[in-house]
Amino acid sequence: MGYITRRLFNLLPVLLGITLLVFCFLHLIPGDPAVVMLGERATPEQVELLRERMGLNEPLPLQYLAFLWNLLRWEFGTSIISGIPITEEIQTRWPATFELSLVAMLIAIALGISTGVLAAVRKNSPWDNLTMSGSLLGVSMPVYWLGLLLIYLFAVNLNWLPPSGRISVEVGLNFQPITGFYLLDTLLQGNMTALMDVLAHLILPALTLSTIPLAILARITRSAMLEVLSQDYIRTARAKGVLERWVILKHALKNALLPVVTIIGLQFGKLLGGAILTETIFSWPGIGSWIYEGILARDYPVVQGGVVFVAVAFVLINLLVDISYAFLDPRIQYFRHHA
Image (cartoon, rainbow, N blue to C red):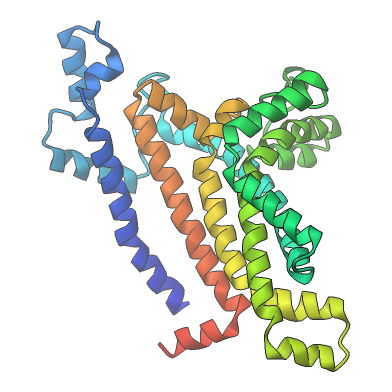
């Protein structure tokens, strides 16, 4: 518990640095923010009113302190375009991003770890070469290109899956969200029709989003497994007659999971903030597409609130990954206890 408390305190400078960077980057954009948001045809009175309303007439240090004070109260202001409070927008949209990222990460974990293990066990085999070539292709493939290709193939040509959205209009008329997580809500309501429709809408964006973490996990798992399989205790287990599948799953894979868990945490954090292209292509109503729309409209409160929220989520996920190390490797807990 003491370690968790120390880690939480260590996060404070990181979070403070994030807020400072977000604040500075937005104020480094050329032009008057009030004029940019209102447009060139805005009258001087309208511009001055917006500057007063947003506190843009104050010195930058005072603006930053006001920004921090609002963050501590979980107040990000109001969208200039929609007039909806930023916190309300985040509460509405983050379940969609989290659900998409979670499904994509589960696909990446299941396929990435299994293919990586098989590639390590069958080193230099055709399967190993295919896995490494496929992972290289997955990392190199642009997400927007893959998304458009999947839409063209499975939605336009084959008409198997919907091309965009989170739920069909006709199905959504008989579906009332409870938590904002549509998969969970459909199960709670026992609405199997809505569940199948939500799953159909999830497949293409989740596959698109899972490509890069899947490829990275496959390569990292293979590398970690090869290192573990060369250890003396693996040879000892085999010499004792332990079944090969138990040698792989119980002895090798468990000890190879530490770097894999690190990558899972980092990639899941990236998915939460890096789903902008995927959400935009598939018209997914999440945080990523919302930030993108805010950037296009120069809606500063939206961009500030969205980026800070994603950054905080990324930092907290990495904290959870760091804490999980102690459960995977007791030696880490020992060293922390004696540090």
